[in-house]
Image (cartoon, rainbow, N blue to C red; front, top):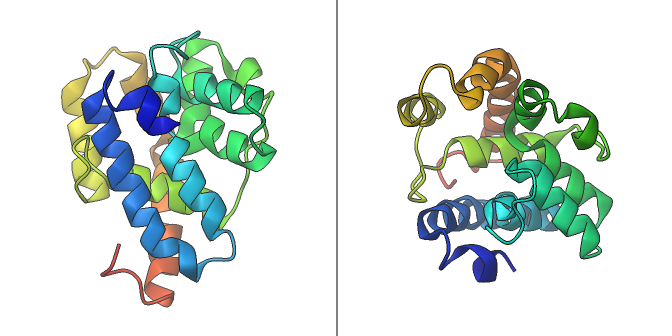
Length: 176
């Protein structure tokens, strides 16, 4: 589904999704929630698809589409809240709409955030700091993405730190 909606319309976004998901596929077999993580990684940016961009806030648009297609509530919640999306929703005045989904706490969520925030737009593994710097370069300081980024750094760093700790304990740090 993600390939059909993103590969031609948004090839760079598709490259990012492929990078995130391919890294998740390495992690998946070592995690009880592995299949959910892999599915969420393939679908996390589907809301960017022009056919789905009702609000132009991709986590919400993606989660709504997934719910309409009958996806599991957990997958919808992971997509809706990925990578501190609640902060952006708040800045945009869409937080109440985003709350139609549940924000799943825990390791699967942290790993999704980590994989998203350590994969470049071209699908390459990058450090969290380099990825954040790239986002800051892409948007002007007054853009809602940057305003939300500033307010969400503690949540983002926390998720990345927890994911990295788990990956190290599972012996996967050098493989992902």
